[in-house]
Structure formats: C-alpha cells, structure tokens
Image (cartoon, rainbow over all chains, first blue to last red; front, side):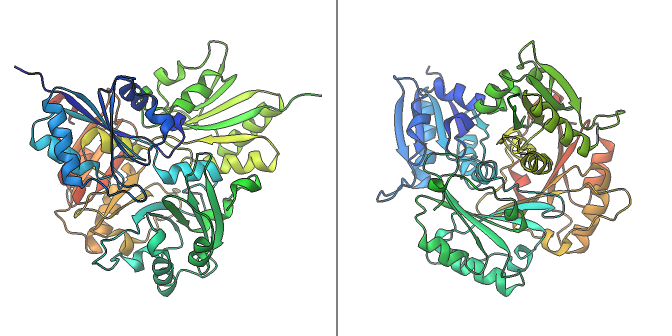
Length: 250
Length: 250
C-alpha cells in the first residue's frame, strides 16, 4: 500500500529570500515537488533540492494561469503519489493567496497538510519604506482589501467604511482599478490630500515606489514605471515615508 | 572618534521560533545587545550569542513596563556607544508594535537603523487553526484593530465600519474590552451568530483557543483559560476552523 504524502502551503513572503521564515526555508529545502507561483523569485526556488521537481502555476505576464481547480487537484494527486509537496505562494497563503481553497480540497480528500505563514506584501512595503501600518495618532488600525475583481463584475466594496481617515488602507492587486478606488474614497469623504504610496517588488532589488496624494495617486502611478503587482498604501502613516537612494524611486 | 552603532527593529513573529524570518534569526545571532519584550520566548532569546547583553523591557504580568520614551532613549544611547542593537518585539514592529515611535527617535538622532518584519499574531493564528484571513465568498478583506485603550479614555472605533460582514475583523489586545466590542458590533448590525474565535499563544505549545459566536464570545472567553495576550477573530472565515487535538482546545 502506498504511503500518502504531505502538502505544505507555504508563504514565500514579499520577495527578499531572507524574509522567508525559518520553517518555510526548511520545508522548501526538503521538497520533492515545488508547485510555485510564477512570481516567486529564482533565489527562493534555488533553496529547493536539485532533485526537486518545479511546477510553475499561477499568473505571470503573457502566460495563461493554471486554473485554481486544476492546482487544487494537482496537489491532491501528488500527495496521493506519496510526494512531499510544497505549494509556494507570494506573501501569506491566507491573505489573498487562495490557500484556503487549496486547504479545503486537501481536507476533503483526507490529505495531511500544514500551512506556513509568510510576510505579506504590506509588511514588506512598510519595513522597506518606514511607512508603519499603525502609528499612535495617525492610524489606530490597518485594513487589507483587494482591488481585483472579475472582469464581468463591478468592484463592490464598503466605500463608506473604507473612507476612514484613522485606518491605514492597503490595496492589493489594485493597479487596474486604482482610479475608481481613489475616486470612490474621495466621494465618501477621504480628504484629497491624504498621503498615498504605490510600491512594486518591495524588498527586492527591483523595488519601485512613489509617494503621492489620494487625488493624484492614479495618474502618478500610471505615469511611473511600476512593474509587477502594485501595492497601494493610503493613509496618514505615509507621512512617515523615509527617503531612499534616488535610483530606487520611480 | 567612536563609531556609531546600528539598531535593528525586529519582529519576533507569533511565538514559534521557526516562524522568525531568516533575516531576523541572522541579526539576533549577531546582536551585541538584545532589547526585548518580556513575552518573547526563551527559545528565541537563545539565538543570541552567549556574549550578548539581554535587556527585558515592555509588559509582562506583575511587572511595571519600561516607559516607551525610556526605551526610545535606551536604543539611541546604546547605538551612540557603538553597539549592534537588536530591538526584538512580538509579531511585526509596524503592526501595533510601536516600532515606528522608536524609528522616529532613531531617525531624529541620526542613528542608522533597519526594520525587519515579522509574522503578526493574526497570521500565526490563521495558519494554526485553518481560519484563513480572507476567503472567496466569506471575506473580501481583513482588518486589524486594537481593543486596548488608555484607562482614562473610552474605546473610540468606527463601529459602523467595523460591523462589516464581508471583512474579517481581528482584535489585538482586546481581552479587557471584548464585551464592549462585541456589544457595539451587535448594536451596529453584525449578526449574533457571526462565528468568532479567541486564541492565545498561537503557534506555541501553550496555544489555547475557543470557537464561539459573537453574542457569546465575551462570556465564553471569560470562562476559558486563555493565558497571555488574547487575539479575537470575528467573521465568517471562522467557519473554516479546523479541529485539533482536544488538549489544545480551551
């Protein structure tokens, strides 16, 4: 009888290889199969043993992503073959990572699995720029939303609740819709001069960032060379932004 | 002329030593002075070199915490003595960690410093319990607030915005005020049967947790043995909760 394998749903963190957790680095180093998002950096993939099979899935420019249902099934099938499988995702598997959909499938099929958290992009951006996600007197809390929506649906968010000047708002995957998002926040009362930051590839050598204000954020971001997924941070904490060498600033 | 030292503001993560980042483990291993919260686990402190000086600050039961201003000053003074200083905090320095206040003081005094992010308690709790912070159809985003307030002030939060059934609400440091918090959320329309979880010491052998619903959360948490800081997770994602061996459940 074949031994059932084990699946680790692992957060690869924001980009820099040494922002992996020790646990993530250990399980990657023991992987038999590494099913990874295409955006996970080569330096992180290099931690896998030479014998490991690497399977790229997920989104990348000019590539059709593997559908989520197919990824779920792939993880189950590899585990049923007895493999030690690492499913490696940018950031944290349980923050916009669809890790919980994979977990649900594994659980339904009786596959043993564990989740290893990762530093999410907002935390990487904060550490890199000095823009703390909370700060006494500036932000009493922080909120992560996704600016992504299905092409056939409008972006439905609780705009009134989001337009809270006391909360830091972080928008993941918002590049395509940032003009609409900023417009709605302004319409619901967030001041035009609210400081805002756009950042891509935070914590990596490819990091690019710009500081703007809410009413100019969309046009400034559109005019800048921000490659890859863009993270937006909106709120008074952006006043804490620290300057960095000019070649890093978009 | 004396060389100025360097300060690292480092997130110790949620508790488990192997949920430190590689970068955090490296700088702790090179520390000359380790200024640490009292709640950071002995296993993590043991990563410091034997020659390192350990300085406990911050809150612990039956201990007066060192005032924040004094910690800020201590970091500056140690750096001016030329030390390699690691300021180690639970979770992430930039999420309710007051790291940005220390950063502001260091910057004002011209001390070189870096921030190393850490897995925050909400992420540790999610990975440990299967309660994903976001999940398609259950939560389109996640929000972290603090339930702590100064003794002479009421808890002022945007209750209407917080009572959003489509957002996962995580309350840090809320044990003292959870009855008031739950009551306000109910009054602002969050359904009584909204699932909710209380968890302490997530990711450590001392982890304790309970699953309840919003209208019973405060009384259930009060009746349970939850030592140390308690984290509350409120929202439909708590339906994803995975059972664990009974000796871990409060």
